Image 1 (cartoon, rainbow, N blue to C red):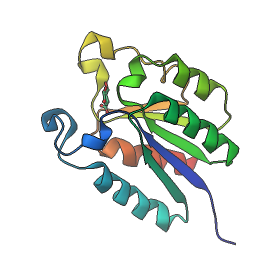
Image 2 (image 1 turned 135 degrees about the vertical axis):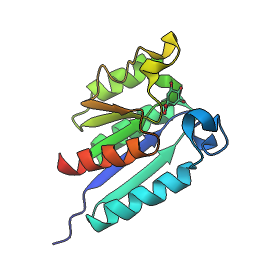
Image 3 (image 1 turned 180 degrees about the vertical axis):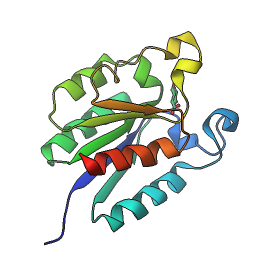
Length: 146
Ligand code: DHK
């Protein structure tokens, strides 16, 4: 029987600008490029990727709850700047049983002090940061092994 596991990949504010946004930090790949690569790998593992982006915090909360309600296998989330501010995302992750992997393209710990705290990381199963778009692929590999 086909494996119908779903992995949600959620992206927060400004990640829709990847490719042109501060490329010296975030690189030249677009979010579509990343989604395509993930879908390719996941497809070979017969896993469905649900790939979303929003600039609005509440949508990310809704989608975390949706992943839970859908019985998703895992959530990979790059919360963008909400990483460092959002108790709502922290609480949403604590309130669901789906394992959540926090990711970042850059390594926030090498950047400004206001990026050193992660409300999401405090609730997530684990964090992968600093590998550019490869952070997404490493998280997918981890999610597939869970
Ligand atoms: C993305 C952002 O938009 C920032 O606000 C975070 C993260 C870092 C990233 O590296 O992917 O601080």
